[in-house]
Image 1: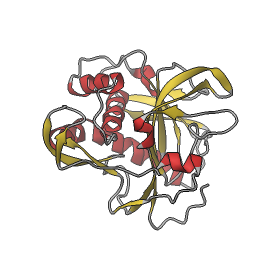
Image 2: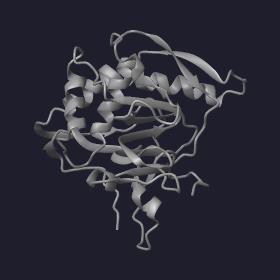
Image 3: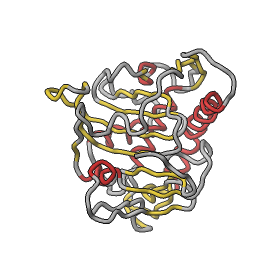
Length: 269
């Protein structure tokens, strides 16, 4: 049976600074960019395998959150990165909610380097068990040191995600090219309205736009990045298991989450 786990003890090792301290709740995605509401969370592995065992759903009264980082780190990423993440989500969301017709590709101004670092920080926070993987180590160095360069082998792709389903999946492997089972990549994903992010060690994935192409810019450089409004994928894409894809991973994968607002009458399968 797969359980939905979103917290640790009140005192433990912080996922970001690695010190043993009282732990606080980190909202993933960060509060301020979405409406915090009661959520029903299910383990994503169960969704894909549809095991016969009774599924376990966990409820949260105010969004998806993890008690994995200390108060100081929580406040740090809130000040340094969350404003940019939330402004980007709110403004792109307006395009999707608008009755006006926009071009298939438009350009929107943001601070991509802060956006990149914030996404990575929240992904490290969204792991219930403390981990010292290479990915987590690199993120810790990045978020506390503005001079630390984003690794060339870290690639973040993004696309429109017009769904109310939040999905968090850490440390998984799948084919680098869908349908080709000879070469695999290492991935993480964070998806919530109105954008989805896929982090990979591969430089390309299915012609998605890449956020990390701006990695060499200054942390506060504002850049108009393209938003491809015409491309909308299934809410479980690309991690969904089908004839063109397989998924594998360790403990972090079994701690994955798919969450819907409690009042939502989902038609998702």
